Length: 337
Image (cartoon, rainbow, N blue to C red):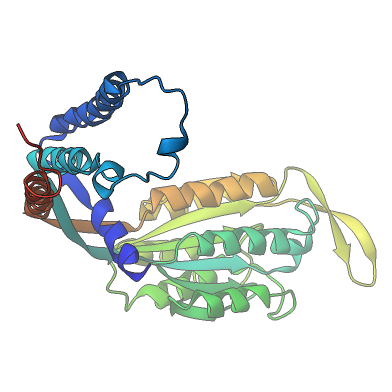
């Protein structure tokens, strides 16, 4: 059992330089069938009045093993054909060079993100989609910035995606004063990337409102991102017209959907990114999938293969079977002329 465990991978690794030679293996079952047919035809018949004299006569060893030389010859032919097909084993190893992307996610957590045009609300829908986006990029460093009236880093750039996912899961309303400081959110995300040595640096900024707070002008922040070779993908999150919102202490009311699409588009254009509008959760998911496709981590893989000839063991086995057959035919199975 232990040996077969090692033999199986060896056999699986074999390839043949002349695989067409293996077609000759079809000769083996044909010769076996011909041998059986000839043996049946050559059996002589004898008519006797009683079989009593033969009841106690057993078969001799030679009679019992009469087919042994033929079996050995077929095994010789089998292994000889395999050897002629030139079996080769190949050993290969791979060098994988991963060129990751540094990504800062800037997420709006203002009060309007409580709107229920996305189920259960915009913020929770965004968190679910971002979680999946992170799961799909195991080789990248990703950080999380949240902003409302001001901005702060929820999780710095990291490959520890479990910690990042925990920071995302515990992100909620009310952790910052209400407002929409798009410039501060973008500026904080740029700060997360300024020390990055990655060849590709990306910010994904999501907003559902109009810039009305903060200290940094969004277009000035976009210019800084451009100068630092950081691409910014912007997402306008929210349906058209009005959306229901659950205001604590007041109940559900309608709020006007106001997204500064012109600003978000300008930020994206300035940095070589792209602007997307997501009017529902399905569209939001498609947006993140599109960004995922555009910003693919580059994996360079080099495969080294070394082939070696493996015909000798099969040829040796064939010679052993042939030698045994010759010895048996000239000793135990020797027939007089």
